Image (cartoon, rainbow, N blue to C red; front, side, top):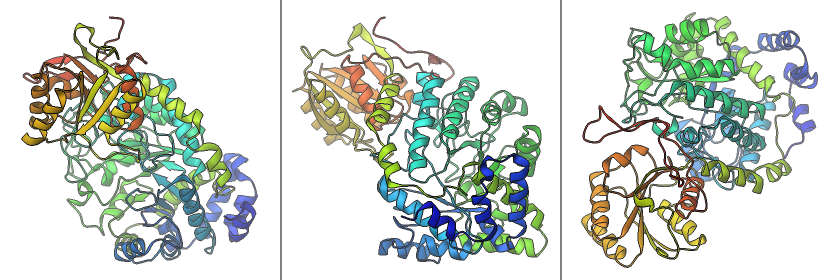
Length: 598
């Protein structure tokens, strides 16, 4: 691992002088002068590169596995992260689990250091802003042994701004220790549509003021720990039934509704000093009637975000590989139009070569001025300076060991999770379960793949946790769409149990059949909604129902402790649950949640 001195010695020209002059501690005017001077000495190609945040395959910056080399050659035209940096001078790199970037914390630290070294060895080398999506809950890229917290809707159920701030602080410390300095979190969308397929439990809830308070608290936690937080997805993705990964959603809110609903958390994030804001690939006619996605909308990004909301930080696009931004324009036009709209960072284009050359050509043809590039490059460099990347671009293994997944951090996540579990139904006070009367448990239900590198599967995690608490629990995965044979197997197993715990996941007809046939056995059935809390409305006959808002280990273990009476249910619904037979009527309102005292 290169030392700080070695890395800085490799940094050429103005970047080295900036790092060594300690301008991170100087006044803003002096810092801006030096940063502007640095920008003035960059080539146009270097400026274009700084605007891109790109994926790259492999666990190492210089020696990835052959399969990852092949994937890089196919998608990017280079073999390694180091080669991509040398060719395109990218200003940022995003880590993904599926790109094999995040095997374990020490490997991630080495990858981060390799990326920084490769960039700093270039002429006028600059540190790279390494990013990822570590929302917690159902969207995480860095898994165990890092500390994993409940997701946003669970935090919304807990309702504690202190917990949100603690989550940001602890998670931020761990990300910083492995070299990730920009996190695409928190989600600032207000989830008012139960059918939302892309946001849902990634949102803190449906009340804009509550969401705003939790967003601001998490921002303070992350940025206090030295990681740039990112509020997403502007101007608001909470009321759509279309996933912008695969389609082009349209938000039909009026301007007045937007002001009172969608805008509130983003205003709070800006007041909290948010470092970056991510755009949404959505059409929002009340804000821009052109039919363009918000990512490419000058009225939305420059007129509203920059002008009306007064935001002058970094604006990053959502992934440019998503269908929502590719529906109307080709991949060569999207990055150019995004920059013209007011974007600074261009995230993960399908083809870096196409996008990079399109921006360069737009400058050469006069469609984009070099001065426009300078605005965005300066914002990006200001952020890198604020994060002290010029002074401390690399991390240490000692820092990883000292920080990531410590017993204190893991205990903090467990305590926060206990405050989020929501008890929705508890007829005849069936919960908590007694080991004397219901010792033998069968745990069945949906077993979606672990969302964040935790151990999983959910039935196994619940069964193991309940066994640790003194029960004898057996796991039987029945899946999200159990067949008749699977249902029959579960029913047969239930007859040999004292009680059945069933996990529901975005309830389906087949899952309803499973639960109804389990109820018909006469055994006590306890249901746990392991994703959307809306499931409870579909199963009115279940005598005990909890919501965990995610199927990550930390939340399932907390649910097990609640079921066993080792923890009390404190969570309150952060979204309303409508009746299944009449969605216009509310079955359980925001703030609803039972306790064991009543």
